[in-house]
Structure formats: structure tokens, C-alpha cells
Picture 1 (cartoon, rainbow, N blue to C red):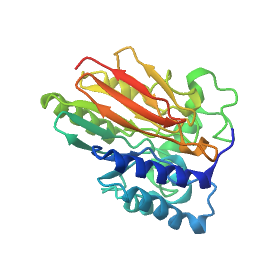
Picture 2: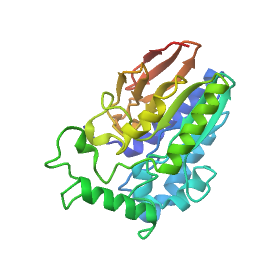
Picture 3: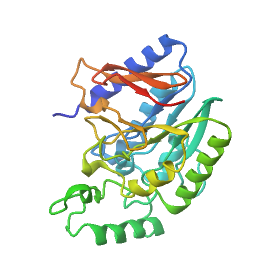
Picture 4: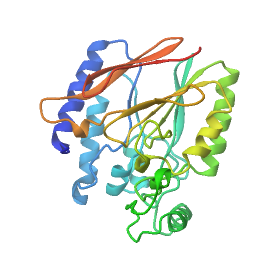
Length: 282
């Protein structure tokens, strides 16, 4: 499968036009990798600005999260202001409520990561130590010799840190009190049934343990694994990994919108993005 970088901007332009024509959409959200990892570094800044500007043409709020390809191009202290993620100490997780009934929780899947932070940053050092323990290969993006779910211990993945875990728990507590339905969004997938083992968050089990303490989370959405996927976990939570615009040959699209109801989210896909009804107990 080829990757079609330049065509992706056209896919985005088509998407924004379609979203604006819809007229009832509350917001748009980008699941990361706003720019390609092989983009020449002297062009990275302008490339990110160009894509962000296309999102800004949507008639409403546009939200972003960081992916590994973004971090190959720009350190997070430069990336977060461009993506309009208001940040304390470089953190890139936040939540918002487009309607009183729903809350969207955006996780930072590269909170603990060997990419994006300064080389001597405690989070970089923690990530490198973790990879050293979990992946014996010299090339830390190689899963050679790793078996099953161990294959997620690669440098292009990351983890949610302890502070973020506490924050997530508090947000889900609050959403439960407010009787809100929660959609968790993360660039890196959280459920093995929805993505290949090589594309999973390092500590997906720990994150899902927190999520499973509550009944408010109905759907988890992710990117990263370009082919897309869908699973329903043991607690009835839907995990939908979205197909990447990067995989679209010229003349095709991959985007969608979600219609929200009391008992389901209905993803209406265009082109390569598969439509999906995600039903749940209100």
C-alpha cells in the first residue's frame, strides 16, 4: 500500500467543504500525524501551518492531538501552540463538552515517549529505560523476537503517564456525576481487537483499567494504525480506529462525521472510511 502525502491535503479540503455543507456539526477533530515524518525538517513548520489553516476553514472549533509523525518533525514545545493545544509543562491532554450530554476526553499517547521531549527530559529517559527493559533489539522500532502483545513495545508508540492517569480518573468521576456519555480519543489505539499489536499504547491495559471502573465511557476513537479497525471490548465499549487519509490514492477520500444519539454514535464514512454504528446502553 502506497502513502499519498500530497493528496492528503486535498482529502482534507474536500472534508472541510463537506463538513461545512452539513451545517449541523459541532466541531471537527484531527487524530494526529498532521504532517509526514519524512517531511524535510526545514519545511516542517510551514507544512503544519498549512494543514492547520485548512482545518481553521471549518465553521466551528477544530481540535487536534499529537501523533508520532508530528513529533518526528517538531518538538512538542513548538507543535502544541501550532495545534492550539493550551498546555502546562508540555502536556497535550484535555477534555471538552460539545453538548451537555457528551464529553470528549483527548489523551496524550506520547506523554511518556522517546520522541518529542528534549533528549535529557525525565519523560524521555523513562521511555528509553522502559524500551530497554521491554525490547531487546538495537533498533527499538523493530518487533523482531517479540511475541503477541509484546510487539507494542516500539519507539513509535508511547504511554500515558501517572499524572495523566490521575487526571483521566478525575474527569471520568466528574462525567459520571454529570451523567455524561464519554468518548475517549487517543492517537494510539487502546484495544488489541481494534488494531495490530505493533500499534498499541504501551500501557493500554492500565488506561483501560481506569476506563472500565466507570460506565460513562461508551466509545474510544484512535488513529495510528492506518488500515482502521473496530472492536467491542469485554465491558461493551466500542473501539474504532479510523482509516488514514494518507492511504487514499488520488481520486479517493477518507473522512467522516459522527451523528450522536442517546444510545449510539453513528460514524458516517466517506470513501475509504467505513461507516460504523456504535450502539451502547445509555
